[in-house]
Image 1: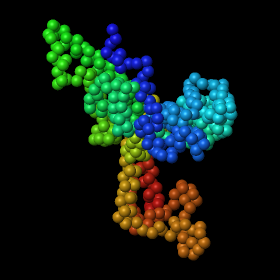
Image 2: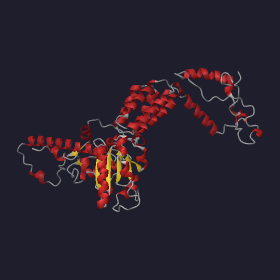
Image 3: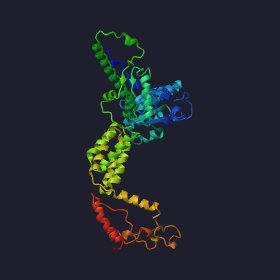
Image 4: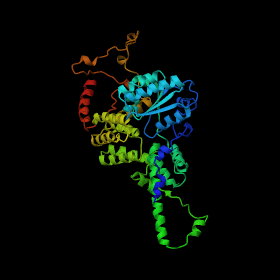
Length: 468
């Protein structure tokens, strides 16, 4: 006997069944699908339209619709569609596609769209094999990648293609996508009820990834169906021979369809449902706790909040940016290497993406939380800006002004300037601040970490500058 969950598990995954058949059905990416845009023009039936034969490289996170767009364009345009995967295709396969595309164009006047998934996995030689077909218009290349094309695609191919960046789907787009999958005959065909709680959980956990949302929905529908079947069997066993005919004909009887709840979503994705709204208070509360834990040197708390943000689908670039800010604001010159590590983590996340990006984020978090702290540089710039905004500044001293343009020396510019490198110690007694701010101290180093050495050196420097 077929289990209830089998009703929601076909041979083809829900995410594939729900792929749009035209650009009108595509969720999100409105910035790429405006009238007259390259993708919309490419999908037109008039192959002679201006700009309709341009090749494109689609760059974006997983689940943002790269394959969907390519297939929708192919269906709408009526062009011949060929798909290759960089994982399995080699140079020979590429050359065969190019030759066949040339034949189709010359003999039948039919143009070919070549969709190449994961182009970043192609070697330079494999990408070189694409160039003749793209340059001569034998094929219209639509390439998809999750990696930065500037690092993963050869320059000649980049220069012959339009680079289009796909964005993670917004919450409204994901919600509409989930609703369509529940109701559409290609999807769950209204055989389940999706609670508001479950819908919100799906949108939250998908984190802009349509495929993740639909995969979780399909799995949750199976869990809900099995739970409903067990409840029905238990009720039947308890009722014995009780006549239930009146219940079956009662128009006010409860909806018999399985109801997907938040618990079903949690079971389906095998992770706890985190209370975390990327647009709400919890978003700001968690990132605030994260940064304060780093500042307070509690590495375990910092890692905990990092994990919460990662699991809730927070944008890893947002986390990386906050780490860079923390390295400059809270650590500063107590450990100059902290900023380098934070910037390196941000670059690594942008380069490799998620989920592997969690590793450099964790490394930077641990380093920043456990190193020495100083906000002296942060306080210095804030104090200087406050003075400038309050009008606390004066004219640049004459001896420091630019003396390179004609007539400058007649004005006294540069007169009396002392070149620091002429001194044996590289520092000379000289006034640098305007007269109005002479003796002002903005930077006050701490005795923490490497700034302890800066403090001792700065004391000597200021004594020499002041002529002491």
